[in-house]
Image 1 (cartoon, rainbow over the protein chains, first blue to last red):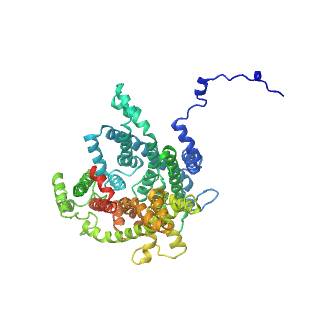
Image 2: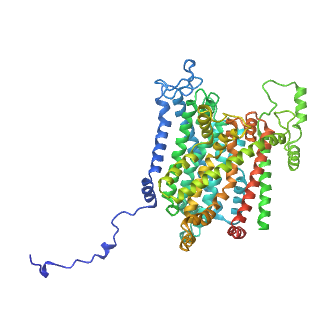
Image 3: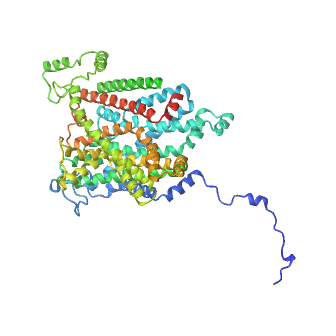
Length: 304
Length: 309
């Protein structure tokens, strides 16, 4: 076949078209989600958390036993068809109690994290944004409070407040926001010098608008990571408190209470301790996996 | 440097003062008291007890007395154990806890730091994966779980080590590992990331380029620089060991201060709770202070930053 010049014609130059964006732009969150999905450990953590949450919500409803049903004939039973994880010294079904404990642990984890989130973000945001004397005083307070481990404050508060789920939340909420406040302050300090903040101020945005609409959304990455890593810490603290006798009231069952109850008869019935211990460990592991994954996904600069 | 030390010292006192006042207020807001038992005491005895512990003085006077005694290092009598002061309890318990804690810190350093270095030098190989897998389990499993697990395997099942109590070196091993679990895992993670950081520095390439053996580079350049973050973590580490001792000493029935503290919580022995909390906080702020000073001395770059602050 012959090729002649008239078989060809110049392509029209489409300047507009070349500039057009073919695919929708990827937002920060979509990008982070994509990175998170590639992290196998983080996804395992996420799925485990979803499964534990489902078990915590629906498990106790499906169980034929209630967490406080006692049966003198079924004391300290080993794993069986009737009682999948055995029973405790009062004949209560251990699986039901562990599922019920999941409710308490997750409630403590999520709610404590939520309180930290609100108090810590507001405190750190105000401190970082206003700077100067306000920042100085607010951060000095944080510094003095974090001089000793937060757990000591929580123990003291729990000694004063009556043991119980609500008071654990209050004690955790009163104390555990310190870390979040520091991180948010650090973020805000660097973000507030950005040009878009200046631009917002030029068009007349007031302080609270700048803090809530510009600074905090941009600091959201580290905030979410900190909040996620706060959850296992809160779960651990609740278990710890319950373990030393400052936790939820009987007959309520949190994982720490179950572990503590199992301790005296531990040499004869070790599974009573192992099952709640495994439950706590898996949950904390899952949250730590997810938290680490979120850190990598939301803050790619830090990744090694 | 001098100004910085002074400012830190002031903040040490401030923390202890705040904690002391805070515990005082908290303990006095509690309804009921150590002598409000179910069985009512004869009024005369009740009066005598209140007289003895000065519970009838106005609150401000109790507070002033309390601070005055505190300055002299007197933490007051125990409410629960007649004739014993909180100072006695601390004198009995603290040496035991301190010995156990020191062993745990040593163990955490000896295990965690080399593990982190090995992990970083073999980045993404099986050694790295193995160390990091163990480390994340180490930071996720609560200390009371580790403690009971160790007890079950090594004392109850294998019978290699004593189940509980205190006295011989064999008694130290299990509680030491239980206490050191979290910090060792944390050190491994910390050391890995800081070693990776140092490995990518230019001076490492220079050291290699001038013909230094890989071994010499690792020992003289990498480890020396990478260990700095571990030093800063020593303060929080002591705090972690201390709170960990509450449960570990209880599980292993070790007569340390942590056990007395938890017992005093069970008994609602308010003066002991107050006194030990203040002792703990004074001890911890002091440790943190010393660590910070040491850090400025180990890493001279830090002084400038602190002075500018």
